[in-house]
Image (cartoon, rainbow, N blue to C red; front, side, top):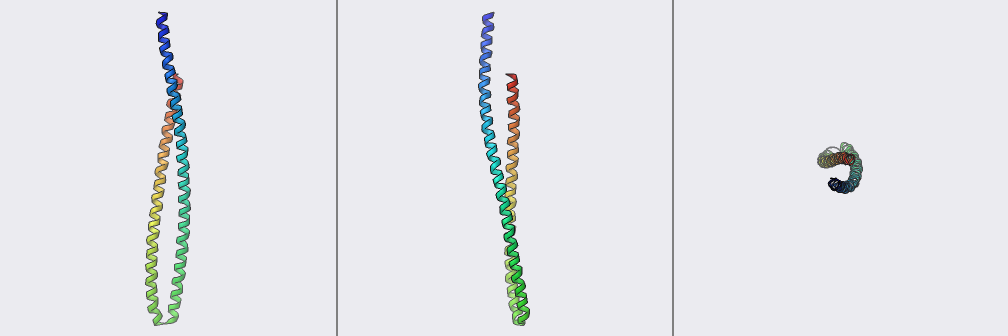
Length: 151
């Protein structure tokens, strides 16, 4: 009976050793996962900073462009009034050119806004992915803790 008990004890001890190796492997996996998670978070923060810088830069350029266009339009109107009917014809032509330029600018601004929204969407998607990874890591740590308690 003692030999049977000893054999059973040795099997259990062997299983504990296997479980410990498995737990150590899982702990290594958890450390690698945490490292990847940290790297992903750093990448997201870099992307967010870049998006913010791009947005600020684009807004400043758009503001400068609008101010220049307004200034040129104002100057053109003043010159047209002073020059009479011939200037009125010129004014119409220039106004049309400025209108075309403004329309092109509005189109570029819309495209830029669309690109920014796409980048923001990607950032949001990355944040959701990171949260899912963090949730998975938390669940894994709970399971690892339960395995430790069982051991």
